[in-house]
Length: 172
Image (tube, rainbow, N blue to C red; front, side):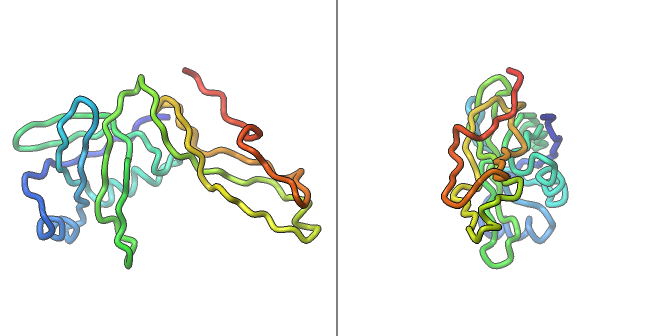
């Protein structure tokens, strides 16, 4: 998986009113933190961030974050730890970025994709998906886009276990 570049600005002011002004100017308040770096308040452009998360990797995208600021400029490889949404409008309110090393394993949640047509459904059964994501531990460059669960042989009463999911072969 390639890294996606993203530009950010360091924020010296924080608070509700500052955040409202940023959002009105199509910027998202955010924070970047991680091992070896000091937690820093930043803001990113809404369109740039949307473009970054609308890649095939989705929210598991590895981002090369470049932060420009009055006090210092720095660059880090980050992943998205959390995206906070407005409960009414679903607009992005805040983003947490976690600085990572490309040589250390991280834990991420990967979407579970159901493929195939189950014969049990044609017999009157219902396909009930209990899990929609699976947590995996891997290097940031080896995060799978999704995990496929083949249901084409499932009859009524059958189930798929984690050990039956085919994980992509990853190069370490």
